[in-house]
Image 1 (cartoon, helix red, strand yellow):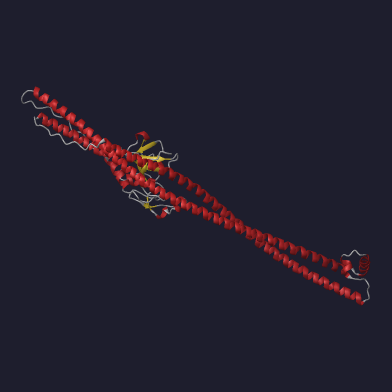
Image 2 (spheres, rainbow, N blue to C red):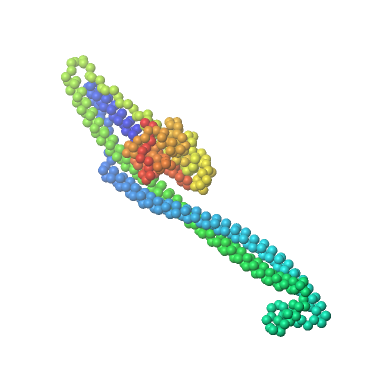
Length: 443
């Protein structure tokens, strides 16, 4: 805007010089136009000091925001780790539940087998009791059956020998079966109890691990949310101060512009006076009735490219405060975002009407240049110029694989749609990770 004004001012000044020369040639004295405002050095210094103070405040906020965003990134990693540990605990719990269910089934089977063994014992004991009762009825003096069941006393050993001589093979088999059944039942009962106890212990441990993992995940998420809220507050403060810095710089630029225009006025006034003197000298030396020489033709008006750039910037600036929405924006304005399966979805971009970085550029240049909805392709859409030669209306890009684009406004400022959770804003140019060239689409 300032460039267009300066060109118009220059054109008007040159025209004034031409008119003055014509009037001088005809012998008419030209009135000198009033001088433009000339701000004092103190005013310019005060404005510059204010801008420097705002720049320092922006720097401090930038450092704090960078630290907050670094902490937020670390917390995000911690949340992801806690989520994975919670998933692991859940899997372990399900496995423990399956093991417990299997152990319970094994215990039930062992109990059924033990019950069957108990029935076998009862049947063997009944057969043994019948045998002993029959032996007593027949007058057998073989002694107590306990002699067979393991005593080492000599008398019992003698009774055992008598028993062995008296008991038939089938009866001895019944006694062996009874002892085997007793042993098997005891073993199965013990195994079932041990398996069930171990399974219940594993399940309790898994449930405790799940509770601990859930609590850790919840704490990590709360910490992340608190940090994110703090980062948003810092970002809002930084945006506000950056806006104040931009305004302060604009004021300084305005004062410096006024000083420049005043100096240009002085130079134009000197040239006008020199032209008047030259015309007077020519008039004094030419023959009567000879016409004065004509002035040079008028200078051209403001550049069409400059006017187009100002309209592009005006379109972009009209969207300040519009929400960021990943995938949002076209040549007609903000649109609903799209899902990305990650960060944008977490911020609900697919429910927001707004712009992403390349969508904002599509809207700003609509009617002048048709741009694709991808910053990497937008970098190839015009002429590349070194950053040292960038000017108002150029596109700036970031990343070795380009992932962001902004519109340069001049005076070290730019307008951008930054990222999810934020809005279209004016901010200082960030030189970290910036691509070493700007892309010029107009002019």
